Length: 116
Length: 112
Image 1 (cartoon, one colour):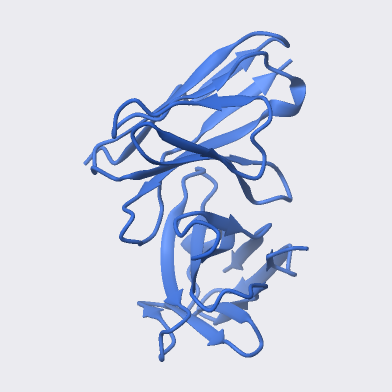
Image 2 (cartoon, each protein chain N blue to C red):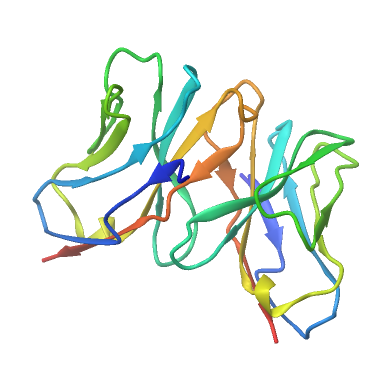
């Protein structure tokens, strides 16, 4: 069974609009962490944001926020005020304590295109 | 600010050839790992290490060997390359105190 599911292979958004990239996860471990990474066309992996399973508030980092709905097991990334430079692949990933706490399991990714 | 350094960035091999992808980090991270990235499949864990002398298998270890003789280095060896190993390979590290993975720039391997 997929541990991390990203159901949107591709998304597009108009510049300056907000966009939500979906991520659902599957775990029975009460202690886990959720990450989002950005991969631009140049290929490097850029860390964006982290949410711990015990964090009471949704994580935010600048224009990025994580809409964490624990009961639904979803961890959607919200990008506000999209910029052309946001065009990239976005990966959701999970780390479980039981699985070896530093191993990340990745989703298949969502390709975001920002249009002017 | 070297971070995680991978070499080579590009490599073409013939089936059956062997090669080593090098990975070095200068952040004194205990944890190091290798992932492969294939279209539509995200990143999949090949092998990982939680310290010098300790390695373990990830999701897709077949066809790959690793060793960790120092904290800094974590080479990935392909003993007999196969076309199915054509992929982009990423090395990543982090501290065991938790935190995000720091990735190298990736190595694109093509096996003919």
